Amino acid sequence: MDTFTVNGTTRAVRTAPGTTLASLLRDQLGLTSVKLACERGECGTCTVLVGGRPRLSCVTLAALVDEEVTTAEGLAEESADLRAAFADRGAFQCGFCTPGHVVHATALLRGGLPAAPERAARHVRRELSGNICRCTGYTAIVEAVCETARRRAATEGVPGEELT
Ligand code: FES
Ligand code: FES
Image 1 (cartoon, rainbow, N blue to C red):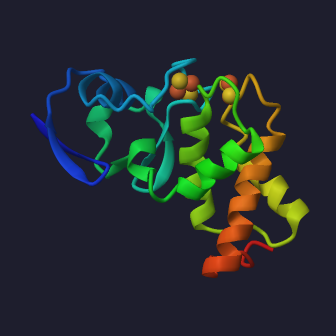
Image 2 (cartoon, rainbow, N blue to C red):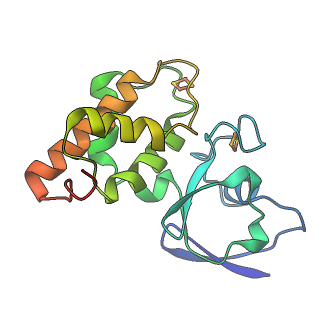
């Protein structure tokens, strides 16, 4: 039996050797925002935060995780404006990739984006390049993330200059 902290709550879990973090989160803890597509580290749909950094949970062994894990469920409040921007911009169609994009972009936004719009968009495209979307063509996703950064910088003074 191991203890495991996810979305602010410490849980007791039992994992068989070889259990992936994605399996633990989905199958044992019922955190179904964690989507599985390629299951070999190539698409980003299974992205969660481990110790605040994006991690592909399908290729992460649960037994090796010793920092807090955060899924899209645990980011509901922090990502509310980002998710609204996704909806406003039509940044998803089937929505299967969306939790992974939201998790990754939430971590990205904590550090702010370059103030110059074109640089911000390039930065977002580069940082989210491991999150694959079959539906949208990415433009709306990038715009939603950039718009969220601009709004936060305007209303909260969130850092937006250090990457320029
Ligand atoms: S399901 Fe994990 S990277 Fe594709
Ligand atoms: S919205 Fe369908 S895969 Fe991204």
